[in-house]
Structure formats: structure tokens, C-alpha cells
Amino acid sequence: MLDEKFSDRKEIKYTYQKSLIESIKSIDLTDYDYNKANDEEFAPRTKITQKQKIYFWIRLYLNEEIEIEPNDIVNIVYTPLNEVLETTFVCYSKPYSSKVDVDNLTEYNPEDDKKVLCLMVDQSRINENSDDIPFIRSLFKISKYYEDRVMRKGELKFILEKHDTDLEYFSIGF
Image (cartoon, rainbow, N blue to C red):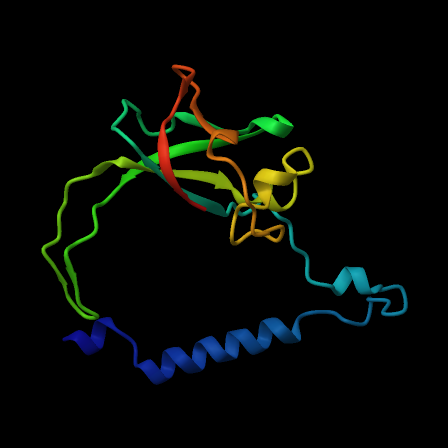
């Protein structure tokens, strides 16, 4: 009963191959002038529709919790040179578990550690478009401008833009 409804696979394969060969044979190559063809005509073409974004992450360890929401702007300000770098608050960090095994994580705590902010900055702002922030760009360990730096804590400020609040911190992870 099914044999009547469906053709044999060999027959289908043969019919497809035969139609493909016939369509290739029907292409007329005699009218094409190969001497006029240039490399650009046969070269692969690519068009970048959207530049890929890569982000650097910063962890800011605060003295006390603050009121902040995702996508809030936090500016890094290096006061001696008046350098300003805009970062975006993405999330809070998770507290580290008390016991970490290579294969197993025990005592996982799903709560957020609201004293540790995870900030992100566009990598192109640090590595490509950063002539206005020579000191700040050198702090990022994965940037091409990284250098060990010594500074006073009061010279590098983190300012929450929506409240114009200077954030009190005790450590930064670039």
C-alpha cells in the first residue's frame, strides 16, 4: 500500500541526479568573456553588518550596600588628570562558597552580595578609542595598555551618575 504512494529511493536519487546534470549542461559558457573578468568579480564578498562587542568586567568592592539598578551608569574618575570612563552596572556578584572542589560546588548561596558591583565597559573604549583616558586604560589587566600603577585611593573615584554619589570602596578588580 505504501509502495504505491512513495517512489523508490533509487528512482528518486536517479531522477534528481539526472535533472541536476541537465541543468548544468544547459548553462551557456560560450558567451562569457573570461578576459574581461577581474579578480573582484570572483572574489568572496563580505559585509560587516554589525561590529562585534567585547566587554571588560570590573568588580567594585564597596564598604556598604547602595541602591543601584541594572544599566545605571557608574563613572570612573581619575582626578589628577580629569579622566572619566563610563561603565555600566550589570549585576551584583555572588558570594563565594565556603568549600570549592574541582568537580563539585558545595554550599552554594543563591543570594547576591550587594557590596560587590559588577561593572562592564566596552573593550573598544579601552583599546581603540582611549587617548583621553591614558591612566585609566592602563589599569585594565587585559588591555593592551596595561601597566602596574601606584596611586592614592582618593585619586580614583567611582561616581553613580543618577544620584551624583561618590561610592566608598575598599578594593577594585580590573
